[in-house]
Length: 436
Image: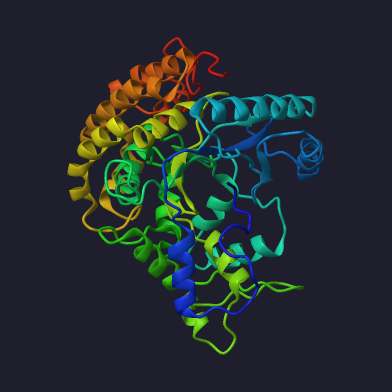
């Protein structure tokens, strides 16, 4: 479930505007019973002896060469700034997903430890400026394109990390597990997830004023690329229009630098004298970064990377419960419906609701109240999804430590950053071992 160029189209031939719309509508939402679950966990990589210093590129490359020899069930990829990502295979259950990724992470950590390296779960690097590790035509072109709008895009590429939960699109029919409801819920509940799991309040060694600096970057960098389609319409039609009207980031070349057009939408490209082919459509889809991205399944991209070795499991479990259990999904829908008024009819993440979630986390009273209700519903639903006692305990501990108190992991990091220790180690999640 990574950003590889595959999955939406197969044959190479020029595509018309109508063909693009039909392809996107027919393939990017594959409906049916919610059966599979996936997660993509991104990590910053650091020196064990000097965690705040950037890892020299040669050291990273040697460590990643060793990682590529591991027999992992997850796909292992490297992000432009050297962040490491594990993307699970689609799993038939929550515990299958947790078990496979936990085993892969054990192997990855052991190999990195031999190289004197470790993994850090921050939504944004607290200390170092963005620095490119990968120098490939795709990322050269991406950097040129995003630099036109400001520094946020480069920080997103090189300094951010997340927990991305991947869910089936849902039933064709309406109801709590229908694809229309799940699409709407993802964009409203997404703000609650941003607030509850915010963990990036520091950048360049300074407080930023945001609980989730990472989310603030996504909102600011390029609305045509990072925002959701307008809500309220039929999901397939809305997404197809969004794909066609989004600006083209780059035009690939077989050799040399890729062209970075200015102000050309994919729709305009299909109407040009040199229209794109299906492979170009595939690639264009990977360059769109909305908070919820349909790729046959729904990819929820708004959650910051979490502290601790197993902190990623809590957002995975809570999100899965709120979407894949019909009773919990109905509770979540009723809970977040009043919050939609704060969105002011603007698409996520560029609306007041999402902005407040990123800035204040659960210090926002309405987001805190919604989170309390949603986490309670998730806790009740998790046994029905086969969650183990260890997972239930981890969710309960997170709820008590953060949600019930109107706090998020960013608040722990701020305490540690300001040196205001209260007798416990802040900035790390002290959950039990919650693997299968």
